[in-house]
Amino acid sequence: MSVELSRSHKLRKQPNAGPVKFVLTPFHARKRLSISGGVNKVGFASPKRPTQNPEPDPLPTFGSQGRRFRVVTNDTVVLPCDVINPGVFILAWKKGIAVLTAGSTKVSPDERIRLVDGNNLEIRDIQTNDAGNYVCQIATMKPREISHTVEILVPSRIKSVTSGGNIDTKKDSMIKLNCEADGNPVPNITWTRKNNVLPNGERNATGDTYIIQSATRHDAGLYICTAYNDVGQPAEQTITVNILYPPEIEVERVWVHSGEGNEALLVCIVNAEPHAEVSWYRDTLKLDTNERRITEVRGSRHTLIVRKVQASDFGNYSCVADNVVGKSRAYVELSGKPNPVKINSNKNGRHQNNYNISWSVDSYTPIEEFKLFYRKVPLPDESPADTRTQYQWPKKPPTRNDNEGYGSSPIYGYNSMRNEWNDVILPAVPSEQFTHRMSYNIRGLDTASEYEAKVMAKNRFGWTPMSDVFKFVTSATPEIESNPKYQASYGISMTSNAEARDLGSTSSYNGFTKRSYNVIIFVVFTTLYFAFNTIV
Image (tube, rainbow, N blue to C red; front, side):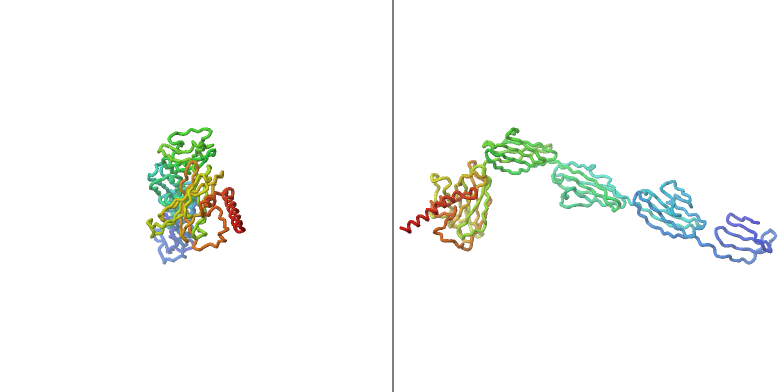
């Protein structure tokens, strides 16, 4: 026979007892308290000395500890909840006030959530709203629980960039590039430039904003914003910067040499944004194309080609470039005059008091004459008042006589100021070669001294510009020479007026000089003369 005292207690009759014995057993504990005695008037056993039964089973405990989980979006996470001695107690998963599971029953309608391997909670395809604290709870009289924190790692994402990634601005303006990105953790932003360095010369820069203070056409290009937070792959977005500016013209050669019957190329390099239209002019007359005059465009290179050049084609040309921002013009001269002279001597002379200087010049038209300038390099403590005269040997300077043969003698210029330029005019030997070569021996120089020289050349169209200044040094020690009585110096010795005509200058032609024939005749004649006098 059994009597229920309450929802949590039962009163049971013990068999095989003299008097009636009942046991009071609480359901929430496993202790038994026995009451022995007889039955009193109301039918309950009279109490006797209580007896203690064996220890109850222990309460459940957790084999897992609370942790922080950092999970990348779209991944799966498993939250552990290992329970030791679970008994009959109910285990539940909660997030905030929401119950996700109770016992083995799934309460949440979210299909991504389920129990795995017993009491572990699995969340698939993690999203940002899954972040928070998850509690595993045991429903004891005083509930026991552990808590896991889930942090969602979000790969970098670029939300926006300046002007949607395309900027058009004028030259000299300030450009501000912005790049807004998000992610967890907050990403770092780096700026780079495709196939180039940044305008400040660096390879990269950091920060949400990059500023170009005063834009030039060279700052145009593709700028790359990269956001990265060590989660997933970096995010990138490109901003195209277009600098609008008027045409900028660079002339390949401001002075172009050509000759009659040859071809001439006049080139202008034009950069502009937007694209510029280019026209060619001769002085103020706009040129049209014809069979002798055509134009060619390759990228930014604009070329005017003049075929079978005539003397009337020589003159000033210009290229004019025009776009919506502005207009520019650059000038080119087409000339029949020789190219500038190039001096190609060794700067260290072999002799103490003379120096052999050599040069070359390119000209389609034959060279008529050269003009050589030279002087001693002034010392810091010297002044133009130094009046020591520097003469070009011989003692009596020769003068040119046009009736004595073409290009036969130099013409000397005298200057009493030691630090001023001395000049010599040298007639050239006619040549059909494009490159004309010449050498000349300068005498009467000081030992171990530094001099400078420059040369001009002339054809029937005029004089070249002055060559670059060339510096040379005379020797400090004498050179051992053979018997000067019979020595022949090819084209450089200047000892008399007659010899100056024959030996004063040379013009190279196919590796051998025409003056060399005169020198050979002179040597043979001199030898025969001395031999004849000896016999007599």
